[in-house]
Image 1 (cartoon, helix red, strand yellow):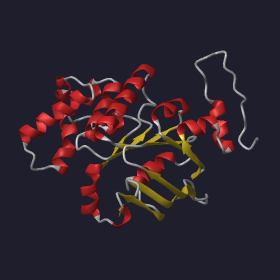
Image 2: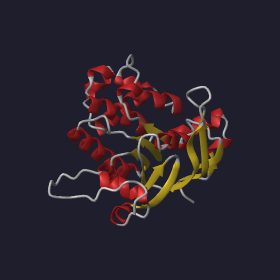
Image 3: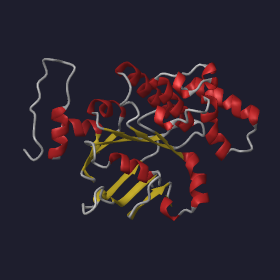
Image 4: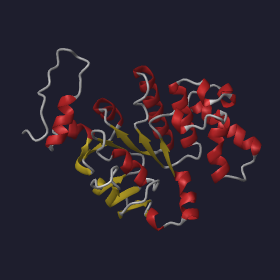
Length: 271
């Protein structure tokens, strides 16, 4: 049994304009994620990647289909039961500042999951664990007293990661967690996520449109196009022998750091 199982997930949104057609964000999507594995989901904007990530955590309810975590159907849980599961399932958002309360100090932000899931821990133990977690993600001790707006973008994302890992979750959705960061900071955050995964055996669903990033971080890749997964394969296999025309288009469009390398650019539908 896989840690996370998505079976024939369907999610449709109402049209943005009166008289428009409904938007099929997820169309019969199925996937599995194993303990300690990184499954990357790639595709262009609007392909349904972020919707899938939120649906897996039941931040969005599906129209049809099922999501099972450790064998439990999340759709069958009531509010209290689902809240208890939240300690094991977390998310790191794309825009770090927008995901943090600007009026709360960093220490309070990171402590909030403990107050929800471990209310009997006590003030001293909570403060100790907050400082240990901030140190684990590479933030200085005095960061606990600072507001998010006083930190850099990379530091803000480390706060988001600290908040996500403080209860030692088994599964995390990483929704383009480095796309808003500078390249050097991006590499540091990705290295941190890899270290945390190794230390705590966390499974990741890594949402991205960056082929270079997913090549480095993922064990397997699922390619999404218009709400459907059109191909899933181990990372090396997908890069070496992509099976779907859309996958080949994504691969051909990536830029190389080597100016001598040439790509045969393809349009989707070409063979």
